[in-house]
Image (cartoon, rainbow, N blue to C red):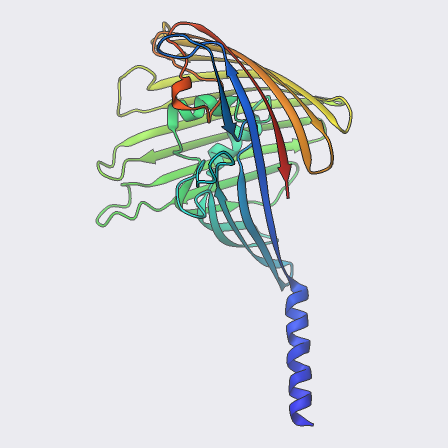
Length: 348
């Protein structure tokens, strides 16, 4: 009898714990075809398979355990891969190279520990006029200027405040892990966002120091504002990419964006944007990019889309249109280049 009661009690505890916890498997599969009318160095046109033509292809595990009193323990593991080859990609390397966090949330806000996006990168994403697709958006210039710095920050601690009067703040400290120095390899970021009614706005700052020299090699600043006119959300934004340790071309670049997203129907969405990038104090280096996109939802989880973009580079700029285009699809210097992609995306 005693064994039966102990077993019943254990089963009860297990059932209670299971009811308070949840684990979700999620992912995105995104593939498309890219046509580009000019490629470097000979200016020939080309067609390529492009993974993540709109959004990155990812897989992940997300979990939450309610520990009472409005508090919860959360984790997120996310990796990137190529639907074209099945290989790992679009990440910081490793099986969970996009995110590997554990944290605590509650009335105080949220704190996460581990590999994660910086508040600066999230602010750039939120401010992008087209919604930050991997074609013809602020992401194109981000990769050209900073690479993955600030996108996948390792050894990071990020605290996010609860929303108060429409305001939300975030602070990041990423440990450099270099003995004898708290500066080498360190990353820090802060952001502030506002969302209330039809108005959205954000601003953020980021800094990163080289792990070997301790010199600051990346400083990012951004600010943006948007307004919703019924089904149309219009935005303007500005991003500055600075490498204070270098005086080379493109070590101090301002990028200005303007555009809108229009939800025509629940199934159809259109967007368009213009991006102007200029090398501060070297105005002969310029890049102008136009991009337009359309999405049609076949179902709640599957969407087909098409995008078209035009970019004109001057001086040192070699701005491409598709972030994950093959290296052989680099754009010719000083030429006006047009690209079109079509694709399909499924989420689970």
